[in-house]
Image 1 (cartoon, chains in turn purple, cyan):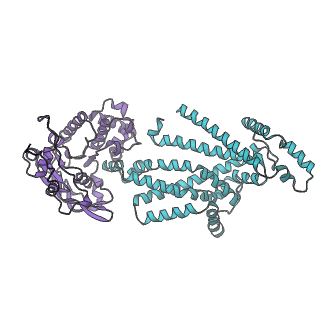
Image 2 (image 1 turned 90 degrees about the vertical axis):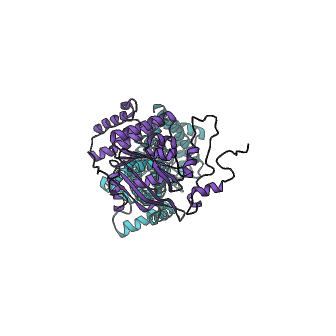
Image 3 (image 1 turned 90 degrees about the horizontal axis):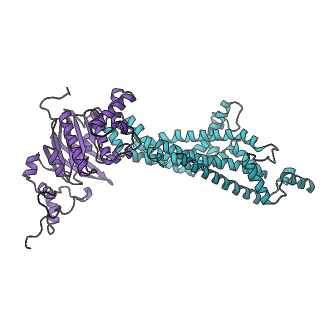
Length: 311
Length: 311
């Protein structure tokens, strides 16, 4: 069995702070973010663009861009301190422990390597497989993620496949080593809705079959409600609300979560105007240190959420 | 692929014809009489006229051009005025030397540039980056003959590691005496090569596909080689191809500086002695080398990047 310790969460993030330096200035992009992911549980990390959700994922993989750094907080994967040991712990955990599915398979797959190779290079290196063994396993994995005729596509290059197929290749590559935790960075954004539903079903299948935890970053509440059992809502680098999906989505306590929910198009209210949250999250450099959603609403008070009722 | 090759070879023939015609025109527009140059100032006019008739220089220019072209097509490059021997024989003797010089120069350039560019790209902005940029600017601004002379002074006259000129007799001596000339030519193209490689490697290192390679738990060296360098070096091949002309020009000057009996020194001797057929033939061969290098560049581009194979 997998080296699981009973009672210990798969991933425990506590007080995570990430600073980003832009043109000499340091800005807090993530402030005191805490959440946990249990085995076989899908946890949704929800927020708009600029909320810092992708940065949170990258910091957990040790793949922050060179101008960002973890300034405080801790993250324990199966009890191992990820940020300790000068980043060496990441190397042991990546692939087999944690893996990541990126947002855009068009840029996250190596453009000049065959897809079969990209699915198995991690596990083949670890197990010292021959080319033939790796190829067979690649075909098997492609079958698992629902790529038709994998034996014809295993030698293809990413540019020869459609967006949906590329994302399946990326997922196959991420789960090739049967990781215990899969980090997903908006993996369905680039896909059309039908393919999106298939990919979500695929993740759900992997969760139950591999007993894997999933940390799913997205701005799409519909996706979250379908896949995730627990949710954390991020706004401008701060955690505004977290809890079970039913609780947060059904009875949101925070104004921001309510606004986010109100902005989700609903099929049971046809003919309604699409609602949006006024304004955007300001860029890191332009927001005060204690920035909150209330400040954004105050800035945009006149053109507020609802249509004026006097008419 | 076949159509591509046929088209390129046709284009190659066209370029070579253009170069040959331009050279013919230039050579005949240059003041100075080859017969007079060969026989000396004191020779009687009748002897000079006889020699001009023997070489066909008394005929109208159009007729001379026609003879030149028809001879060329049948593989006859004419007879050298100075050496009194068929030019094909002269070329057979000297072309291998120049090709070896250019090959060594390219090898040195790549062996210097790739590790240097990788080192700078991995380290990112800082001292090494600035140092390499300054070195590049200085090296790029220094003429080939000066670099050659400096190398001769340091490694030839002071350290006695390499001969200061000549070509030796055995293959080992040839290789040994080509080290400094080849290094001189190489240093002429290293700055541009390092700059372009550094830029494309930096891009590659910050790309999602490198992050994805790490997220699969691959060894950092594997990600660097198979993901970053393989993608980043494609631009280097383009630069090397574009620099083929610089390489040929560098070989020409360097052969003079180091007294290497190659194509370059043959061409210079031809120009100084008004040896029309030699000048025309050597120009033709240099043009041929450059055009063939362009073709090889395009072919290797397709080899490195599967996306380029379709066209």
